[in-house]
Image (tube, rainbow, N blue to C red; front, side, top):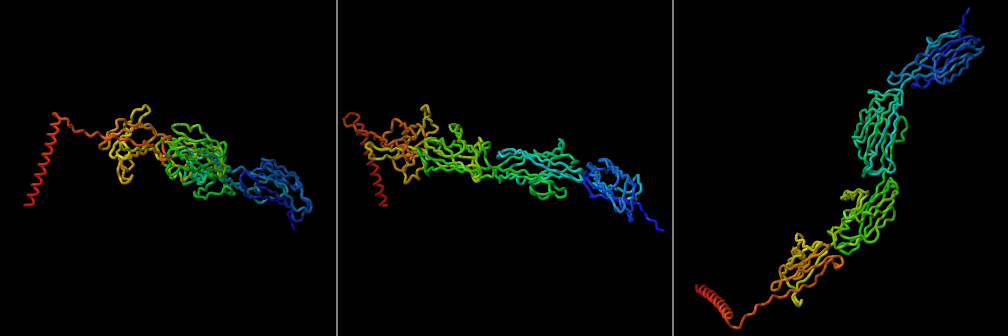
Length: 583
């Protein structure tokens, strides 16, 4: 006689068998008929899940068995009663989702759950299953976001604050042994900005923690971060000129085992975690020209042209316009504006042109990439000033005009127009009474007068008539090498006294000084005022008295005595010469 086991078999399985904590695994209970496939009725069991494992919500329960099944979400017991396998029915299944909330945080990971025969109770007419296992594990997930205070109107000189937020969004804690690492690549920022190292800080839940470190162009923060916590990293930069004006930086999840992990692209796919901030700065390049002649003179009208172009990549807007300043301080001391100042776009501000201390032309306006503005004006040179005509046009509205060095000019943040203006001069000639002869040897002083007509003796110029082969040989104030012709240059506009201090030999000294004025109106085409010919009268020759009397006798005696002495000297000299010849 053969005995057959006609008890159905219970089997269990999980899919998947490895699951992140909080996710689900599908538990399948399979009831298999015996080989003769006879009808089996009345079987039942209770499957109690191991501690920590529970029925998911929703459970998504699906059963192909003819049985009563109870599996409340959030519970651990799966009750099956009144089960029936019909004749010829091979098997039936009961499926539902299970989950676990462990391990989390600092709990060891993974946790392995075993569901075997020990978990079966209330068993009726069914064989024990083999064990089935499923493991749930916690994981570190770092989510990174980044923002800045920069806007489309960000400009050189502005401070920009960056905020990087890194959230431990996983189920496991980052620990000292396995820290969260946040890296921020500033290589695309620090060519356009300076980092304020003192501004670096980090906070977790509002509590200050160790600040990020800076290595080269990279900021790095590393530390413990519990699941659900967020570290907020902030720092400030000041925008500057000199870079490519594309301000871009990349914050990403670093690697504690590879501090030099390459910076990923902003569009990098998982598993890279990346957040980027990028904006463009505009830049104006400036140029300036004038049509000043090589030897600019008082009375010349000089046209100035300032050209400014936005070379991008950012744009200037109405709210944040480009600004150009042109400092005329060292121009208007030597001349005055003529006509209107014009610009082919934007807005001119001429309110400060009349400022005696710092006359400036200001322009502002939007400029698209590659757009240009042209500003023009004219200056008529005058007799006043120091003769050194120099002005600087520059980008921005800094109240301190830059020196505009060679390096600054190379960077096109400023432009200089500079040229000498020939300062006025005065000339005159020293002649005899009929003007037929120029008289050499005179000496003079030129004394400027103040607004009250008083002499400014500290600025007095001594002039000695130069008689030389060329002007280059005249080292004094007189620059005319011809005798009796005098030329003094490098004077400024104003009132002067010309005083003769030594007359030519045999001529009388002028008794009164000559007053003259230098201004643009009375200068010739060479910038010189011509005082013309100044006549000197000859000194009187003394007459010999011939009317007799004591005076006549004294004169004759004196004259005779001089003649006698002269004759005796000649005789002695003659005698000496004869003696020398005899010897």
